[in-house]
Figure 1 (cartoon, rainbow, N blue to C red):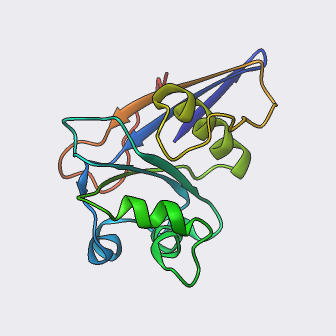
Figure 2 (figure 1 turned 60 degrees about the vertical axis):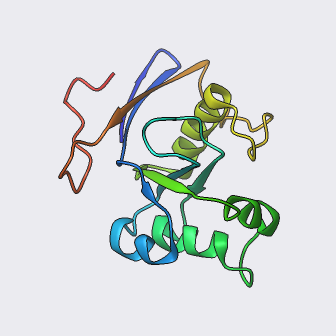
Figure 3 (figure 1 turned 120 degrees about the vertical axis):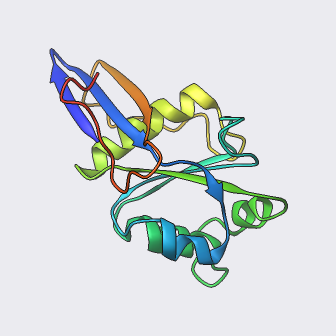
Length: 152
């Protein structure tokens, strides 16, 4: 992720992984242990309308997603159950700056996509007058994000 601040306006650039079918085994092979965002949808890249966007800071993406779907640890068991009712695809983006930056990015994405299982009232950190998020896709074969120096 890249972040620039100008005059109380924040500009973020995030890089999404390719979409891949979700199952408990793909997490350990495909998802990094870094903090970030997970976007769940019914289809891959053809339809970018997410069902749920989930932020994982403390545990990192791999463990955070595992906990989301583990009935013993999940703080959202109803959402996890509904998501697993049908084919599910996952994309992730690493957000490795601060939890408040993740909150800002997550609030913009929820407002932009209005996912079915996210609260529309999810608020940003309140630090900036305006927040802008540019989304990029990682290229095929990329293991980590590659954001150009220019960012936004």
